Image (cartoon, helix red, strand yellow):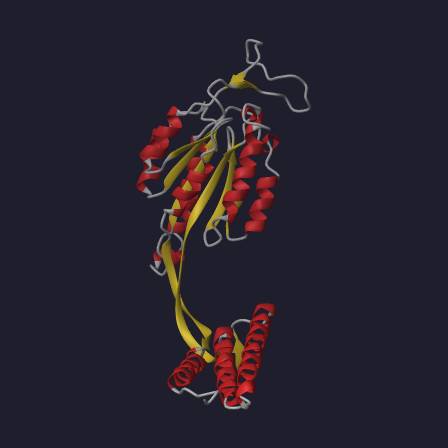
Length: 331
């Protein structure tokens, strides 16, 4: 069955009309020049047929006639990207307008669209961590989860960076011990972790978790959100600001040092999202340079594009048109 790679549209019709009008003008000009000599320029007609033939063949080649099927091997490759988002109450701080969390949501929505061939997952955390969306290719579902992020999704408490990283390690361990991986049919996928937080860590020692994560091959890219000057933390419902145990208004500040160290220890990079600097584009570039692992090779049937045949025939007719000259007007 004959199929076409491209359906003819107005550009092709416009090109055909232009060719016809151009050649019609050429014919009238030749006839006008031949009239004073008592000739009619009829020898031009067979050239017209020749040129119409190869012009039509060029159009057919351009549309890509496909006939028959060819079995082509396709190798699928990709990586896993875990998005770890801090939902502690300090992410409501407005030092990054309109708030830290809202700015992160907007940037993550753009990030998700840039990796259609990779699996992405979402983990939210504060004092505890939860898988909000498992690894998936479904960008629409992940966008929905990101758009509904708010600090009330997790129990209130101080930020513990070890919790989401340990959860990632648990997922990595379960994937490497799956039956398919144990049989060697599926190689481990490259894993990148994007940790988005203001850097305030009130948990226990992070070093053991980081060492295990580094040995697993996962790269952690950290994103520090906030400003060094800091900001007060508004309470939900607009009822003033959060206060510390001494009754003073709590101020949250970006703490970049542990995030830089975490990224360096795992082979990742540190980026910032502040009121004056947005390094999310650099993060996208870094994630693009994380090479995915080849997963499998499968064979797909692809329609064989036969554009070469009308193209070769058209080129032959063009050569014939050039080689054979016709005296349209005889002296």
